[in-house]
Image (cartoon, rainbow, N blue to C red; front, top):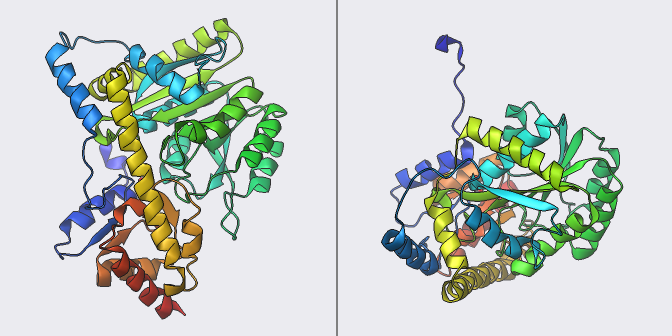
Length: 395
Ligand code: LMR
């Protein structure tokens, strides 16, 4: 039976990790997968998480099973940061832990499919795994352009998609720090999107994977909250991979918002059944560490300081690239200065991306996406010079 399987290509983004590691040149630059790096190129464990992990080791008395919903203390402690002071939205919201943000997106899509969804409207480019997850669950993707040529989010395109979306359809939204473009909707755009969704029968699925990496915890959630205030139902997929630096520990949550408590019970029972059939229950360790951070003011403050430092560094990298705009004509580095979060897109074609890898040891996704946190004060001049060279070669 297994002979029937066809070989599949390795995930292009994850394959970059291995390609980069195999390159022994001394001055390689990794702008591939989305992990934060310091100005000296490290991805350290947050000090707040280290302290919480130590407490966990010292105080945890059992590792017995919890259940498909995971650590509900974690889910509830996180909610006010995401949804604000009224963290159950007047009793209309509930959540559960998932294995990372990917698990949350997967569960959201599976819930939508179980509810009869057939299509998801999504801006493109998007995180490649979005479409892959939807396709795996038999959901069609209806694509529209996320951004305009001038480097702004194309709000008319999403309003058009929402206007067309029917009752068995969902609309995917990136809450902040759009992956891969770094181009987010403005508060005015969000108000219009919320209004359009309020008048639409489509279900919003909101992916919040970079909370706090844009402008701040409140600012980054504001657009999503405007949508939630306007619509009757929504699914919110959350990731702690980046904002707590827990990548490989796989810490995420899915929240569901719906009108009545009875319906919330039904949604939760379906989400639990889907989780049980997929991963049974999520890994505990990272979520327990987040719960301990959020339960302790000193650790919470330390976490927020660490997150602010990341945010400030990413702004500096963006400013540095924008300032180099004239050194690499035609690539619109200036626009990168206005983006948010870890990512930006460069208008490069495949041969240029390959040349950057081959000749300069610079690794980025095949789409032209760069992880700006891979750039440091030391390596930025080399990066800009290499860009100028390959872009010049094109001209
Ligand atoms: C990325 O887009 O680089 C990250 O979200 C990591 C991943 O799982 O793809």
